[in-house]
Image 1 (spheres, protein in one colour):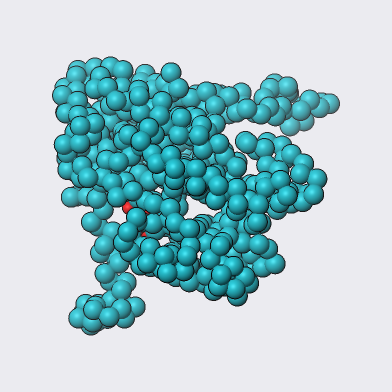
Image 2: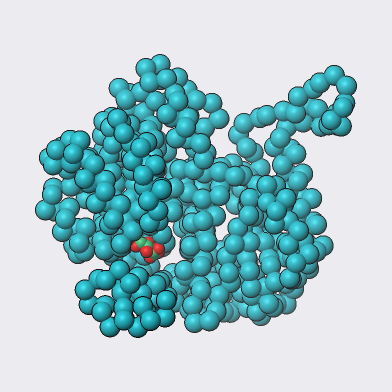
Length: 468
Ligand code: PA5
């Protein structure tokens, strides 16, 4: 098994009888996902994607990634929400949060291997090795954009603009800025060879622009929503540019697809997780905290929060998804989790083998009182911290579901991503909502357009101005 779902720390809060009682609902919800009979069924393209993806496009993506690695120092990925979170999450999970610093500081000509990264980062344009990857268009901060423009100064830059609708304001603004930069630097034609657009097959402003300017385009399939799109061109192009083995990532998702394609409440882990979540929610545990012990998984938690938050938070319902990085946050949020309002449950992500070994050094004397840890690995200490915390939190009234995997690699990550998407879809149906729409996101957009003076929003603008 690629993953284990450890249920014993939730057993004191959810009985076997309660799991039996919810079984029928979970089975029905799972059938709705697998057979495509539920609400939002037109957005189930991700379910069979690991086997049905467009091979021809996949090869084009790999070729584009090779070209970018060969002619660029920096790739700027422009997108927001589901159009950037997955790619960033996978890249940081596998290569660490400091990958750009490592790449930038590596010797350009020696192509030396940087330790502690998976896969190893080498940089040498000649051998088309990894480059710096930054994300823009995910906010409207002039400070952030300005600092990224400074980073890009004097470097060769390519841009991957990602927007399914092709009309989202934040990435559209950032794209204008970077288009201008590239056109000034390389001329219109040269810039066009460095801009890659990932968007709808046929419609939207970005598609029209890309066709008019001759950018290479990749498709966000009609039947895959933003937060379920990381394994399409949306995520795969930036991930491939990072030098990550995208075949392994898809293979891991494919393994999960096989395992979760049977309606079997005993064996299907996505069904069991969805069952626990809904029982806990009905008992008043309305906040789920995703707890990890690897800081490089922090962006993966952000991806997870969007997936569950946007899929379930509607019609006055839904578990609020939160996240922590332990042991760091045990020194900030640990107090609340241990003794605050009792409405939290935790989903703990555990990787047994870190893949690198750092030992607590031996030293003369024992002035720091750490003698008992000499020669022990940090991995061991981290694991003990995790076990200690799980027991303490369970004692404090916080149910814990533990997801355990061997190693943090492409295959496992692909598996985990698919597991969460499948669990989320099932869980949303059990909750009684459509897990594939996001009507609530429109409200702020309408107001923002009105306050920005967009034509067509004059009446609303008048009303809002009066309330400011
Ligand atoms: O999950 C979603 O649908 C959203 O988060 C979108 O991905 C996000 O709003 C960006 O939309 P678009 O890709 O159309 O620019």
